[in-house]
Image 1 (spheres, rainbow, N blue to C red):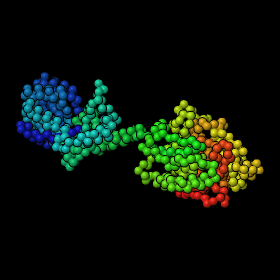
Image 2 (image 1 turned 90 degrees about the vertical axis):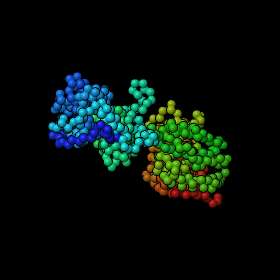
Image 3 (image 1 turned 90 degrees about the horizontal axis):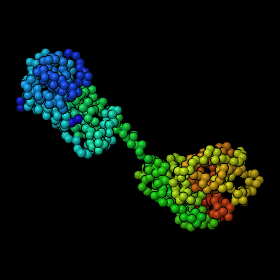
Image 4 (image 1 turned 120 degrees about the horizontal axis):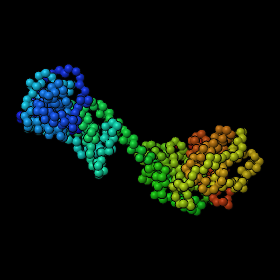
Length: 545
């Protein structure tokens, strides 16, 4: 809808007749379509009736001496325009300009109109039609710029913005070839004399994309020519806002949640943990996550695996203290960072104590997606052919005994824990039944026990129960944690340790299968410490705040 005010000059003199309407009209109900208007004009021409055209700005209506008490609002375009010119050439056309208020509310011709009308020839009609066409263009307003036009098409997603229409305006209906078949319709007309025009706002808003709607031909004609009074500025603005909101909501469904990839990798048991960033991004995409461009490596240990050394864990914490501190600060301030993401995607393949520690640092304050590396497939992506394990695959075993100050918790998913692998003091405590042993087990322990994301969620639920039993039911002060489990489950278990509320966890590790498990790290309160034996040297601690 681009509007302009006709300036009737030359032989088309402005003559305004004021008259009071007898009663309100319903313009929409009485508006003739172009074909109906053409039929009425052709009949009047055949019967040699004198036709009077009354107009006001963009409005137009007809009556004849054959039907002096009927007024027919019309939009003289197409075939009706040609017939109107025939009547003018025959010398049986008259014209009368009225005030817009009078013509808008008129139901039938008023007394005196015929006496005030002037003869109109073909040149008059051509001039009026040209002026009226300009009124539906930009008129006296500023043209919408190319970027403004693209903005409207973008806001509309190429669909008609009339409420409930949504016609695809990017293709023609007959050939499906790409084509712009929509109209950029102004809400407040670009010309004060156009539909919904305004002396104060028409020029100011003429090139404002927010004042323009994309519409199909049918609804463009409806709001501008057929029923301009039925569509107020406020109604059309509400239509535009609704459409833009619906488009945004619909298109947002195409957007995966932004996710930051974090790979925790190390040389474990002499095998270097590989992480193809392309594979990481593909694994995230398969889980419906949009990866940020960079992959974060908060703790990437390339040194030789020397866990047989008695002071290994002290040196490890000392060597990586700055990295762990930076990682902790990043997690605390993650919302203020430029690369903030809704989801943190974790790719863990490190020593068991460090996986539990980094899981504790990440916690559950934000959404975290944990991936499991599949060595035989050489990928981080979940196998789409694998179905989730049935409920009950993971379970707790052992006596929940109140009154003990410490307990042993083993996570046995890839293999069952041999009692002979326990440290000697724990072996003795288990035999003497002085330390209760809680076992989180799998019905069929194996390396592929976590083959589906739902398997990890099932494990998480059982692990949460284990933490609750130890801390809420048994109320122990110290837990010896011995894991024989996939990397993803160890990181996830660390997440379950609530900062400042969990008891002391002594994380055990063993460098190879021929060795026994030995204390590695202690996680308690807001710090992590290496688990050196008393009197063997100065311990190293890092803060977890």
